[in-house]
Image (cartoon, rainbow, N blue to C red; front, top):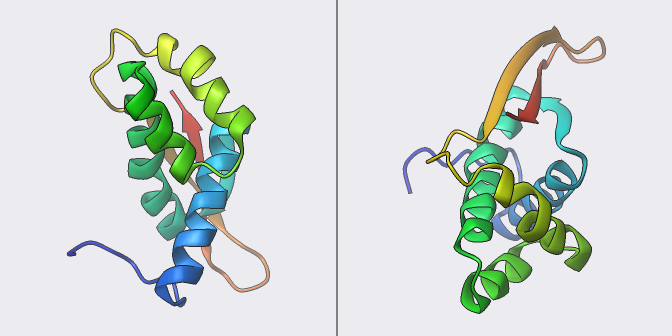
Length: 113
């Protein structure tokens, strides 16, 4: 699939990391991470919010299958998704904040709009 960044991990490690980061991001509403990880997290988080807007059992089960904590999935469906009911996408914003001191990796803040 074009556009997929491997992030130096095998597929199962990468998916586990991204699932956890999406869960934490949806729980807190903002997260500081590297730019490449933020660019991978954004579409997955937006898909979870779109599932939340559907408000049916099938979409809830899809969200539960991806999000690692049930309370976060409930929060997506009850609190986050209704906020974006009139919006057709673009629920996240990525802002670059400079280089990390240790390894000079470029950092970014990803947040819900």
